[in-house]
Length: 367
Image (tube, helix red, strand yellow):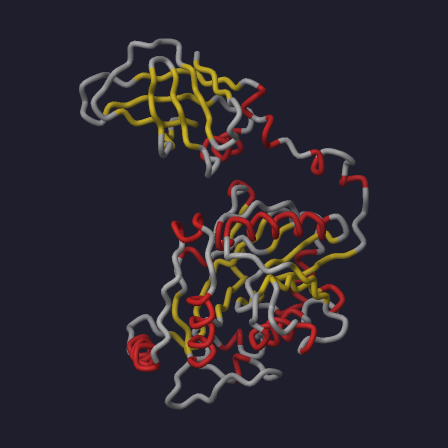
């Protein structure tokens, strides 16, 4: 029987095995749940103890899937020089102590009928042009007083361009750190969940669309059976055709100004709409609470990053000039194209691509 525990560092986990004579040339460590093996990333075996780099909470995410089912630890030598070794895995209280959150335990929020159905929020830095599209879109879902913009130290406050009742929360400017911003937005989402049954988070250039319109979405969210974290099953980039389409004009429907879409890839099926706390990873593409995430077929994510060539060029120039923390530089360094010729060539290639699609008729007028 193996035991998992922690010492002082919450990002390091330990598993003590029942024997200290295991040796192999290329040992790999797995957790097993219902006969399915889940590989653990960085693991070192020292005598009878596995030392795990658990900064992405791989172990905890498997535990959440397990609920009341048994988890096993498995050691396998990829070189085939030793037989597999498996043990039942139990957990010491020290394993969970760093993550206990009293805000989620006391008081019992289930006893309080939250008065609001939905709040929407975003975070932005010096992106006032795109924020006008964000505000125009999400004000279809909720009144302006239920929209929140976290302004990360913009030189010109979004307050200057947004509706007077849209909430602008000023934050001090610091170096770019996606992990820090994900944690902050997770805390802000919990704050909003104290008064709203659902909270929608998106980047300033992301528009979440429901096939049956704003009223249809609010109706679905108002159903008692609708709970958890929703992600869009459909995700597309809105693509500018500079040869025939004018620059985006704020105040007008984007779908009336653009014709082309590109598949955005699996990372844009983002956990955006939630009735429970969400702990996002960098970039908000994934959440640690993956067991709560459900793809909603009628939800679409429309990403506006490439919806206007000049806005993209301006955004890339800003990103390239921003200071990054060492951690952020190691994970997502910024080197974005700003030369007009390079961007024009990129747009031309995408417009000739086989995966180019048209905006579906059922979405016309919805964004």
